[in-house]
Image (cartoon, rainbow, N blue to C red):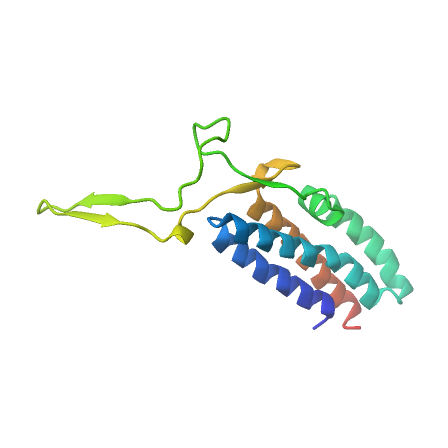
Length: 163
């Protein structure tokens, strides 16, 4: 396994952690930062591992142009995607409604008994977006970028083998 593949596996683990930590803003922001650090290293690591081969460089330029045409890849790798914001609650056009740490759900049973369920704070999901791509959720942008990079690295390893 190449160092580039290992870095992508690290990004994948961080992406899974991001999905779980959306309800905890400080943890989520740290996970996003670590994810961005990992994926931003992938292109340079690929060049370092395979760049000595002249045929690779021609392949890389063409393939990278295709991958980098994806908006998610472009903004994440270039560093444009730096600031994230919580998505406003439905009906809250100004984003002034804070996310509550817990939600209580009451369910009435047929015998007149009421059951109260308080999910743990981690079960409350907050959705986030990058300032530069407000129409997509942070997790969706990161998944799209990771998938594109995985495809490129997989193709590279298939065509050029392992360094």
